[in-house]
Each structure stands twice: as structure tokens, then as C-alpha cells.
Length: 91
Image 1 (cartoon, one colour):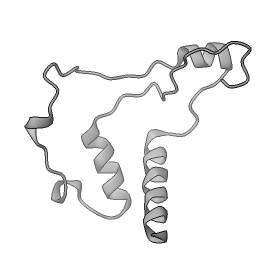
Image 2 (cartoon, rainbow, N blue to C red):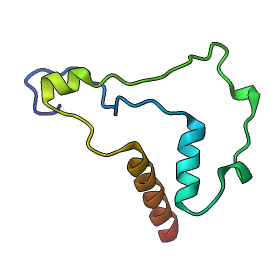
Image 3 (tube, one colour):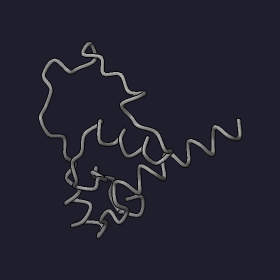
Image 4 (tube, one colour):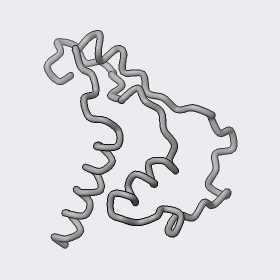
């Protein structure tokens, strides 16, 4: 993106959809916890006009840059959890 002659917008996404609940399940499971024991769903924070599916379309990044996601979602979430644990351990 930074090496392009002209600045432009790109969507960097896996092209895979998931739910926040599923992301929580993966993250908590990675550290040996059951997300249901820690996650509280508060309807106050639901969007007034909730969309059914949120899905990033990386086709322009693929077409123009030759970029495509190579890290599976589960692995990415586990990497994020590990990075947070490392950061917290240093504090």
C-alpha cells in the first residue's frame, strides 16, 4: 500500500465472517477458560439497526496489490491473545 504511486483505500480482511461470541470462545479457550464464565452480554450495547453479517471484502487489495490473508482467523486471535499476555506480563 505504501509503495503505490497514488494513495488509495484498501480493505485488509480475511473475507471470512464470524461473531464476537465465536472470537471470544477462541480467545478464552486459548488460555484454558470457558468464555461463558466471563462474558456478559448487555443488550444496552446492541446497535439500534444491527446488521446480520459484517464481512470485509479484500478483493481490491488482492487485485491491485496481490495481497491475500495467509493467517487463519483462529491463529490470528491466538496471536493477539499471546501479545496481550506478553504485554501485561511486562507491566
